Structure formats: C-alpha cells, structure tokens
Length: 248
Image 1 (cartoon, rainbow, N blue to C red):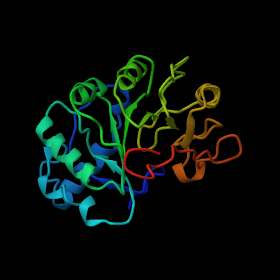
Image 2 (image 1 turned 90 degrees about the vertical axis):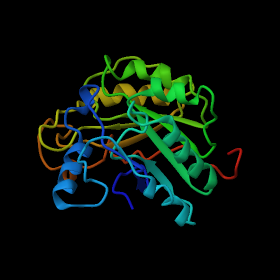
Image 3 (image 1 turned 90 degrees about the horizontal axis):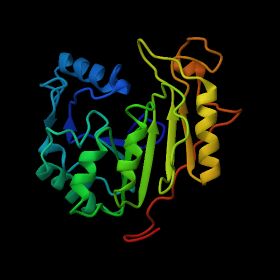
C-alpha cells in the first residue's frame, strides 16, 4: 500500500525518468531509485534509467478488492522512451479491472494527448498533469483539457510560486502541496489561498497534501511536524469513484 495521501497503492510497470522542468529538481523517485538500486532490489537494476517491466503488468489483476492505484509513481508513463505499444498493455490491464480506479500523472501531457487522440481512456482512469509554476506547469493544463477522460486532475506539487489565474474548466480535482526532502523550496500560504479560492469558485475538488519541509510560518522543520492542516482543517476532497462500468 502507499504512503501517498491521495491514493491507496502504487503500480510501477515503468521506472526511471529524466528531468523536464523546475519541479523535477529534487525528484523523490530518482533518489529512491538510486537507493533501491544500491540495495539490489529487483526492477531497479538500471537505477533511474527509463525501463519497462512486463512482469509487473499483472499486479492489479491479482487484487480483487477495489483499489485506487497511482500508476508509475517512480516514472512518467508518457516519457518519450516508453513505447505506445507498452502503454497499450497497461491500458489493457486497466480495462480488465473495472473494480479499480487508476490515477495517471504526467509532466508530458502533450504526449498523453497524442496517445489518446485515437484511443479512449478507460472509464476507471483519472488523467492528471503536474503544475509547479507558471512557465512549465500552467501551459500543461490546456493540453490535459483536450483529452477526453472521466476525471482530469492537477498535481500542484511542489508549488514553487504563485501561479496566478488558472483556467479550471473541465478540471475535476486539484492537489496542492509543498516540497519535502533535502533542498526543499518553501511554499507560501498566499499561493495556496489563490488556488483554493479558484477551486471553490469553479466547484473543483481541492486536496491539500502537505506543507512539506517548510511550515506556513516559513520555518523549516520535519514534514510530519508541519503536517497537512490548511486553514485549520484537512482538505481531502476527491472526485467520486466509478460505481459501475460506463458511468458515475
């Protein structure tokens, strides 16, 4: 199971990635992959080099209990080195397990859009993109919006600046969080306020994941000590899961 607050389990048929934007600077997956490689863990023989793992494709098939799966927490399924033929295999498993819900997050929504230009996303799939700043992140929202999906979501983590006014039309869910780990960059509460207000105005689900290494008071401490409370409460809003194949 997963320690990520907005999912239940992770499934990594792909591992490894390359940096594309400011949010990648302190990539947790890269750090963890190198650690797992040093430990000799199966599947991480290549460290953080992009690698596909056909032997992992059947993992969700073995679980009957309805589960929220974050797909490729250790990679980006729409990295250019991942062939669309392999993505087809992942989608086949997703289609075969309608009891599960799958969250697919990318920093490459343009390639995701090209993939789905002649394919339908399974109805139990949520498609998302990362939005860490104005330069790299905000333009991704328009690309995501062009993809037909039951749920489209934004992972605004790590939030590195005030991203200003964003267009939330046809976006169903927004996750916000600060950066953690060594070298973490601070997140200001006013930046979160801006996003929360826009979500409220647009009636979009809002999930506050964490403050990260820096508290709202600007003091650096452990992620656990800073907690997940925003405006005096936890914000764990999420879209409804698929109740049956073909609709909510």
